[in-house]
Length: 350
Image (cartoon, rainbow, N blue to C red; front, side, top):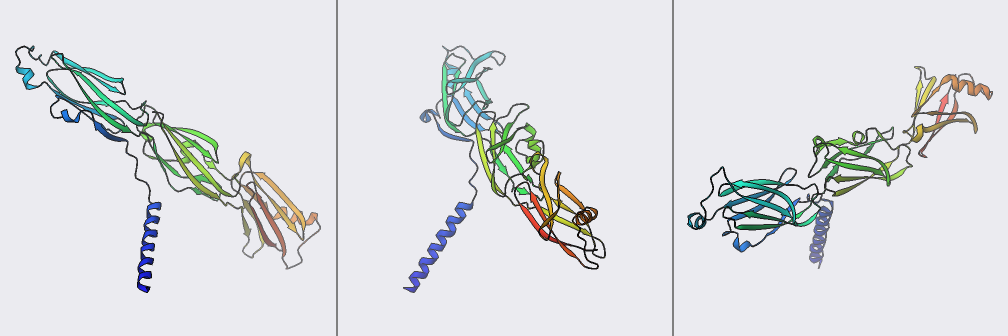
């Protein structure tokens, strides 16, 4: 019984670890092109026309192969094959009955690769069809059914918020199908509030780009309240397909206080540091002694400087001076625009 319980525990542990690894693993990248079937597969070895479809770097490529059957070439009732300088026929390519390419060819055989435009190709199942007129006037046809997934692929490094309240990360967006000067666009939102829309150039495709570079300015989150927030990227491809990426980040950028003292320990001044707030306001400093407000200071920007003279003047105004060779405690209250506070006791002496 004990042995059975031990084996059962091992099995449960193994299943738990397997499920944990499966849940934590990143999903494999989505295939852009999946061939479903080629029409009339029973005739693929006898038909003179062969049509295949492959994935290119930023487009789909159709491969067309055609040879006039030998029996047709030696049939006396058929007009002799034209010379390479004479047109032999023409072909047309359709996607879902929409003409996407057409061209003439010379001779009695062709073997070529044709780019298939994907700028207007939506995700889902489609059919590629080739209609080819042979030199003798006979029309041949071949079809390929395929599934297309051309949504942008988006990845981002870990989000980081520095002590000044700046959020940054590197974004990699890979678009399939691009225009000459435009690869795609990325919407950037925080907590469902749109911050901006960035346009990516083809040379930025599949390369890391900083969030600040996408927006054209540093991304400040110092004005946000403490807690967990959500950054959302929505990448839009030229073909109309889009992809969403969500990442959470935490705000805990409490204001900090730097005190400057002389070599003998006398207080000379200090700086209160805040995360960058909205509309220029980042925070304020209040200084108390024995429950009474001595000094309050609020300035634009992320740093509020405090001098020894300001502290001495505030003490004199309240008729309070430190006793000889003794320190008196002052309470510094730093109140940030995002609601975070930092309270500290600082001793000031002669």
